[in-house]
Length: 165
Image 1 (cartoon, rainbow, N blue to C red):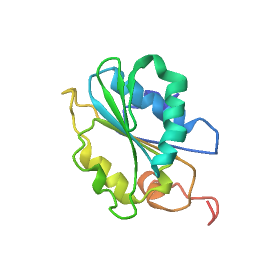
Image 2: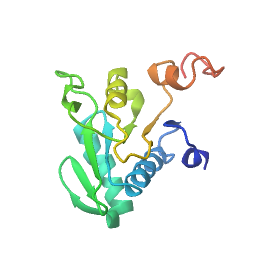
Image 3: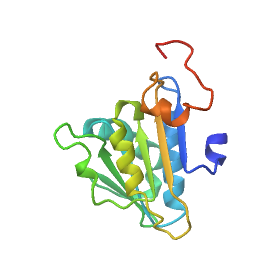
């Protein structure tokens, strides 16, 4: 619905387990990459989660658009590449994400990653297709007043219903 129709550069979707947030976010990333030849990135906290959840969902739903599936990237039918990486390295932080230039990114289970991951992704976003469009998607579970809450809710009158959420 409104999440797909939005023209906002940063979009967030947070809700309960199994509510379709990851698939919705991946659909936005795919749509962005299929409309233009570009590079995108999808991050989850660990490399194991990327393979178990993200790659499995992509190949189940959109395999006809994938011409090559490597360990850490997918190449789409139009030549776009979606990098599939973990969002935090306990020894190196986000240093492993240096050197990527992308026009869209998704932080899957964003609340499980540090704010530094989000800031690194923002720094890597480029208008690669020359159309002025970049996209950042954050999805996850509600998690109190962390950095994700501050990004989307602080200052706009949205308060958690209790101290727990």
